[in-house]
Image 1 (cartoon, rainbow, N blue to C red):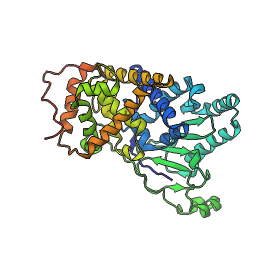
Image 2 (cartoon, one colour):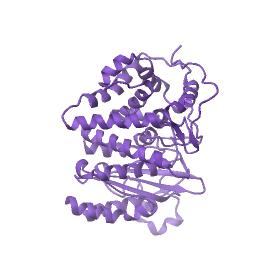
Image 3 (cartoon, helix red, strand yellow):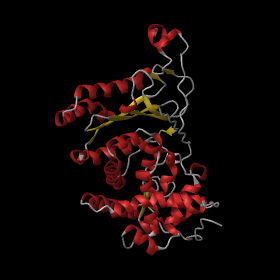
Image 4 (tube, rainbow, N blue to C red):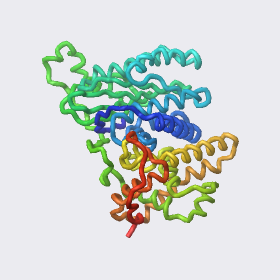
Length: 401
């Protein structure tokens, strides 16, 4: 079983319409590319990985470390995927609050269309929620439950609870193909800050406690939830310690210090600028990268920034170009021409090749300032308004000494 651990500070507020629409479009393109290249099972495996999920939220322009990533990403994917479920063979049910309570009805409706066992899917949905609300007594009350199911009947659950006292959230990930029992270590991952001693009745060593359930209030909890591995800090800004500088620097070198003519030939496109190429490279890695590549989710916020301006405003013009390029590549691949989709896939490979011979300098702070200074050129936006041209644009960015 995989385990993950993330500190997800509770953040309130809504996703502005200009970002929500783009998240749905790019999220849908990413999902479609994964299903076309690797299959539906691979999509579920990625969604059940907290590192990949957080990286997806970052590349879509959400705040890189907050609890809001879970809600906004699942909303975006539900809108995007369910429009083309017949083609993709993937369905998204549930959501936050009232939407979560619609999950059983939505699953039964899908079962009627597909021939899947609706009652079994509803049972899986209810049990996964029951386990995380009741059997794992960690102080978090569920407020979001999303259930993603494929035409083959495989599923993943992404659900999240909040602890009002600590102002923290915990995200739980389930994957049907890894599930042995709902009451025996069922999660693929649990993401959340350590809250001290908790009662976890799903731990494999908790049988004695479960058998003596009526005496629970008199006993010391039998087991501790294991520390999970994805830890996100409380600070809102992105700092250099949050990012693998070698990986990020390699993507920047590919985008900004490679001959433009070579890049145009590589992508079979004209007019692809360095800034768009930077985003394309990071999105390509979200689609094609292996699990070990997602240990620093904050790195992927350097594709499209964040809605609160961290690490920089969302460059909407770059975002739109990225969506357009991936949509065209997917459309042409459906018609039998995979040249563009293969070229986009190769971006992440080329970036990794650059990493091998690259030693980063102390470029990070200059990079963040450069992105903020130039954001106005790309119609940068935050929830606070549009990016403005600075009085001083600063010095040229240097990625090595």
